[in-house]
Image 1 (tube, rainbow, N blue to C red):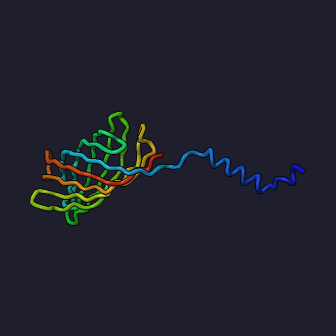
Image 2 (cartoon, rainbow, N blue to C red; image 1 turned 180 degrees about the vertical axis):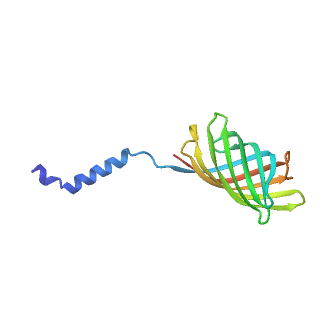
Image 3 (spheres, helix red, strand yellow; image 1 turned 60 degrees about the vertical axis):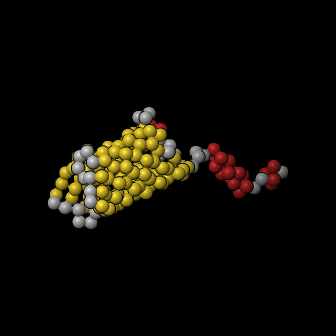
Length: 160
């Protein structure tokens, strides 16, 4: 009689439903914003059509708090295309690194507007497993070492 009360299919369905309750939580997508200031540390011209800038900065960000950041990018001098990499370090030593790409335009003599999309790809410490994306707007005063910039971004992080 016990066998006739429970069909094998309903037992399997109950097992699958139960296992789904104990599986790890899915990643959570949360808003991410930051503001930072920084300095161009180095400028070079690897070839006649490319400028390379190395930079560093400090800022405050959602989910990271106070942080420092370093990075570099190449600028195609003919098109204004920008491709770069960065690493941010939180106060507790956790890091998150990624890439960015977009464009730069001179909006007035010696003032440059960067509009790029950042991709967070790899983290360490409490930022391990975090990924995300943001639209970044930066204003840079000058092009060479000692030139300053500020930027803001608005995007999201995927938390593990």
